[in-house]
Image 1: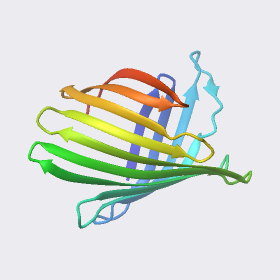
Image 2: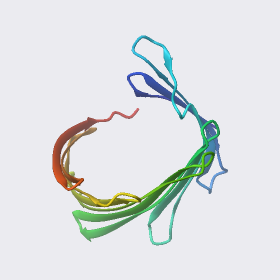
Image 3: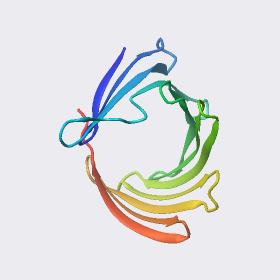
Image 4: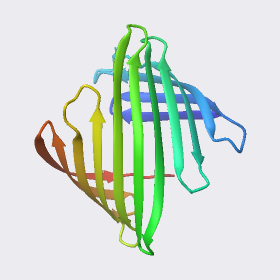
Length: 186
């Protein structure tokens, strides 16, 4: 059984309900119930208050990890699907190479919109001992003339704290950013 309430942002909450398949098959399905409020506490209308979902993950004989997910919002008719594979190789005893191709698509089934497809290829060099990663990725989206390219350097500072410097090409312009992310698991 899946019961996972979470706070998505300051005024947005999600409850994930569902069920897992029997052991040996990493498949699960259920419904996400979401609510967004204003700063005064009033409930905002959003397009994804309820969403049916299904996910499946697995590991191949080569060690590659794959995932497939699909979702459908019966209130709006919006359907989404995604698939990805993650390959990891040991280049040296202290450096790993990760390759992650993925595809994501969405469509408005009710109104007959064709939707969009996004294809991403990501390559990463990861230093196991220092926690430093060099990441390059490219994303192409149907209907957009440019491929979005991103180069990023990430560093694990302490457990749970990650700092990243990013340079992105967006609409023929270069945009830089420095971000810090802190994550605690218990």
